[in-house]
Length: 171
Image (cartoon, rainbow, N blue to C red):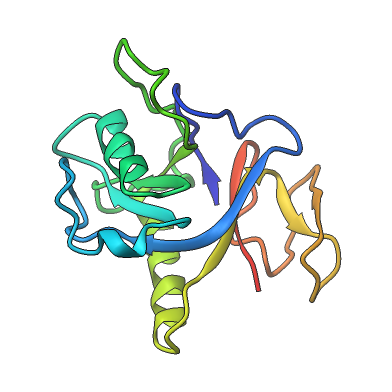
């Protein structure tokens, strides 16, 4: 998926900079404090959090404190999509140097597709593994080797390809 960057944390729009990991949705999904029901699942994983209720950076700080390695904020406006509006950069507050995990933003439609893939994996007691980075796609089907994709392509491991940061499904 095309994803919007954040104005805090590591910049994943730099070529060859990416994070790979299993993804888990936080519970409750739209949270603004550190009282996650599934906090024990965050260690070394990417977390998916719904937008709303507080600042983006506050959600990321709480996820970071719970052990997440990255975060994806999903829009809370049903029907919003990268197909109808460009991704935007999430803003922080005046103090951003305490955030050291990367964070990106996806619109609602793309977030629901991501959640659907997560659900498919959870039915077999697994977690979906994804890569967040620039123009990501697999070099060769069946491998875990990545390359930069310079144009829109139809590779089945790339869920959506447009300019900017990408969220790609891994095998």
